[in-house]
Length: 136
Image 1 (cartoon, rainbow, N blue to C red):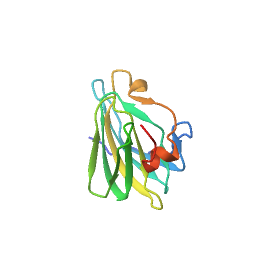
Image 2: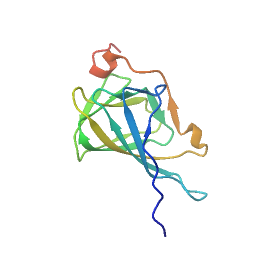
Image 3: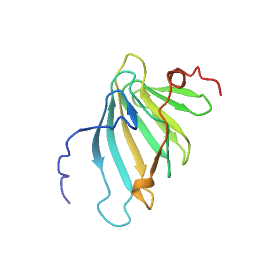
Image 4: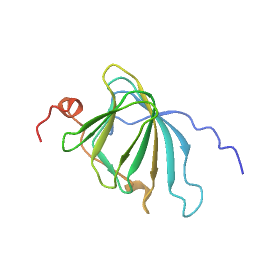
């Protein structure tokens, strides 16, 4: 048993995120057969991910602010502290801070057999995607 070493906060890359988004790892695999990844992610107001999907799905627990989550069919869900949203395997979606507020969530997912392919990153979302006004 050991206390995990501190990992510096990192800013997420602009290829996958628009606006300021920071990541603090909580749990990463250490042994063969372990797949759990947990991180705290903090979004500045209006900051957002690009479209993406996860091989084995993902749970997101909003801990502060208001999270905005969207799917390709135009569904927009605003999620508040204490609520958890689940995205099933392969579902293309985005996460964001709602307009005018910071948002923090805990992201929980399992790596696939190839950790580099666990998350499939796609194009950036549009402002219409973010507001739910795009036509599908």
